[in-house]
Length: 181
Length: 181
Image (cartoon, rainbow over all chains, first blue to last red; front, side, top):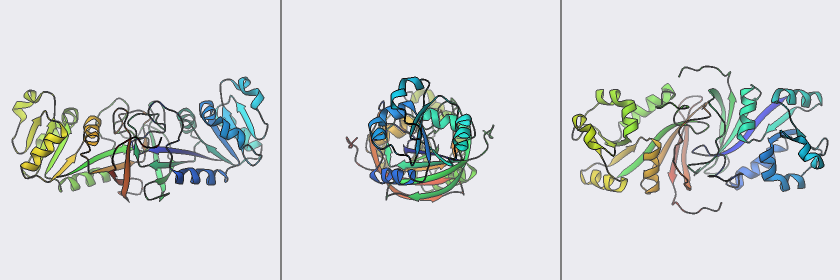
């Protein structure tokens, strides 16, 4: 199972704008890239808040090509929306979930946020790569990619341009641990 | 007068680590780059907290090649450290300060932080470029590049590598204003 975190961020490290939610600030080029590469995944994972924000778009785009997993403390709340094999609401830890997805024959999982989900996966050592779109924006305030005090080092795999101002940076997490700070 | 903000940041947008201060997390390559390019400036500006953190290194390196300005609400507190033309403590707004520095024949100012100083200069429309070193680290918590709710757009001028994992990104702020969010 290959697990890749995907996020769009301002150059001052905001994945949301001010007190708002969602990624409406993402450039057209990032959105096109995002929808294109999602086709290369057979499953994706997001938190329930991310689901709520994008709910109508997600419900309109369900198919059997990609299983969407929504992590929530209250799966029962979403029972009516459940579409086995297409949209499933789960209370699970990252390791157990990925084991189950692998057992179901799935091989490529996109981790779509938000911060808590990104952090849970990276803390568990279950993120193979992080693909970060860096938009040429500064918001000053907003949610950050990771939550809580962490210490991770990454290797830069590639840096490419999605437009003249937008970068796509791909990183691989290295083993976590007390780095030399 | 050309004014350039310089900062080192993790890939999740932290310019400090957790509750700590300073930039000890900067890579050797970033530190070498920083000290090299500083030679191209005839003045620099930092806040008093940044000065306090780097105080002993700054006091050991004073010269007449570059005027260091420390912005503080209490210049009198630092009267004994004052070295006219080399280290000056000032209570000033960005515009007034840059006008004065230009009148004194200075032409290239490095804005060295922290967040409040970066934000004051960019809000005043007085930052010509921002040079951002992106280190392959994730801290989860720490100070951010800018403070408060802002909405700035930038143009990407260049992206280069300082090492296999560390990027140097140069941006130019565009006119501020209510972008289409």
